[in-house]
Length: 333
Length: 307
Image 1: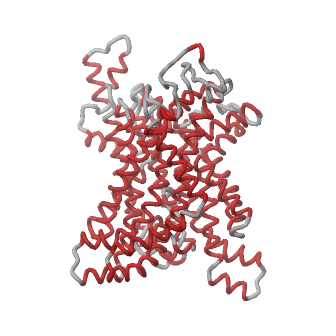
Image 2: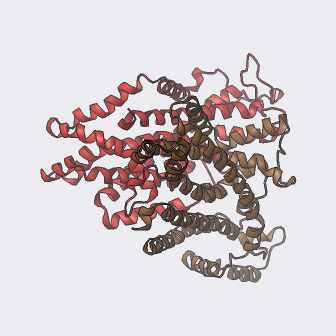
């Protein structure tokens, strides 16, 4: 799982070859299983067209996932969170901006489940409305980083040589930046900080992991017999990457991307909590938790509700990623 | 081995320059004029301002400023603040605090993480294994600052087992913050130990050792553990650096006067030299720990040593 983000972890030392960094080895290890199965299926794909193969890897995974209660729970939670983000008014009639100071920090009651915040605003409404920024930032950052990762990773892995060295060294440099410290400095530079500024900094800092994952996937897939066969048949680079390498190699990227939505959402909340993320009047779980800081003793509900929502949100993505990985890795069957 | 070490050292050089330059450029772009900020109520004369700008190289282009900074760094000079205090003095004062916190977290995650990982890995699929997997998933999902506040609220305020803020109580003040800071890495260590132990226990040499009739204790202790710990040790090395840089949030929650708070003060006071100094120190630690891990790796894994 997210072991991959922290450097220097190898699960399978056999794969640690000449030039591979320890991280790559582990990534290859997780990609390797998918690869093994992929090559059998892809042998059929050479005759019967690529669509049949895709149905088998992802189809298998889906058939397995459908029966996993943990997957179903996580997926259901994410559906609920998505609806919450799109149409928060379905869940609450209260206006999250309406403040009545006479209700300030009132504790939860039957009419107002989560009580009120310091300004006397309905806390349940605020927590519900807070889902939106988290979901947008999580999906936006990971979506763009997946595209960057696939592009750069494919180029580095497929073409190798100077381009690979250039991209690889850039990633090394980015890894050396202490993430939290760097994010604080960068966001301070930006002054005005909204959704896009925070997303931009997170995109800027988070791309190398996905790039490395994709690169090692492509490296592993490049040598496969069916790729050599396609080359011999005269297929172009673009076609080989798109039709033969990506469908097999993308599984670890998808798994890590799912988990990293959770990591990014948590990072956004942490930055907002530190005062360098989103700014008021934005409604964000991180900001709510930051506001609760001085009132832990008297009104712990200010911390507990947004904290619980944030944790469950992150947990859903992590479980989903875990389940996806198990389903996509045939070695575990 | 010699070639391997030399290559790793050479690779670290561009990483250092690249990373410090990115940070330097960002701090260079921080909004506001630091000299004007120094003025306060009474304006400084134009000539005094010019002298100050000259002293801190503020009128040079970015690349020249960076070169001068690196030149100073080579002699151990981290520059000085606009109030004339050397940045290295600030680092000397604040880093030990953060280092103590990181060390506490390190000890915590090592002891508990290894224990949980070994117990889970020895019997895959047992109750203990599932317990470890489940609890680690939950810990990962709870963001550090939520975990920190909840720990502060429950263990510090309601149960009064630990001091809730500051470092007045000596090493005891560091216990709770260390546990919070180490919690995330604890998960990685437990899971890494478990996975690699499970994989190694399935390998051929373990079957051979068992077939020879060696007692279980020896099979696990000497054969399986030695190889299983290689990835864990490498993770631990890198993590010690990551903990120091990641301590900011924990320091904020528990009001610990380490480098985290210093960064915020420095950004507010537009003391670019302090910000750059702290981040540069963080980068240096990261690179150093990576080098040590690479060397350790070569020592532990003969396939690299005899490359």
